[in-house]
Length: 277
Image (cartoon, rainbow, N blue to C red; front, side, top):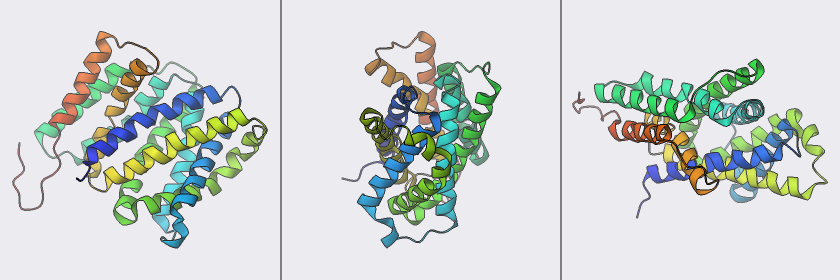
């Protein structure tokens, strides 16, 4: 039985927030850029042993671009959540993907879907821009890079899928090393930090990115961009199960809006078919 692409996205959404929850705890032992290096280095090692991408793909412009996005996006994300609440960073991160969904909208129901999803994310994350200006800058940089990730990774999924992802992660390892290797080196004698760093890499850069590739290969780019609205709802559910944080009435209203947006949204019909209003 063929697994629906929405199932792969759901798996990616779960790990999208499990990884950062461990990374935040790591900041007490390892500097921020060192955590980013540990994440990418451990993921690159897993992909190298598992896929051996150098045997199947040649690094072209898209793979180099994806590797550069991985390196800079992870660094900006960790710099942002080190200074700002995760909910604020998540809210800003959503700006780019929702813009992709808006650009691709051609029907009235898709406009309604985007509005519902955006309203749900706003309610869930309680958007607030008060905080350190440097943190806000990193958060917006992360949002732009996350949007680039959706665009470039979607192309890679159609061309080389998981093998392309593996090659891009190896490129990311090379690019991130000048930024974070020195900070990570201080943790090489700390087995707890190394173990946690490997856990972050697997849960944040292996499992969700593989699931993303499997989902993107069968979903339109704008559909995937809208599904990103599920991430704050997933974070709320993880908070209930893992952290015993019960959602408020506002949180539940936000989840309902996000789910409504996903339910309303439809992909563009194939050429030759009428477009519904």
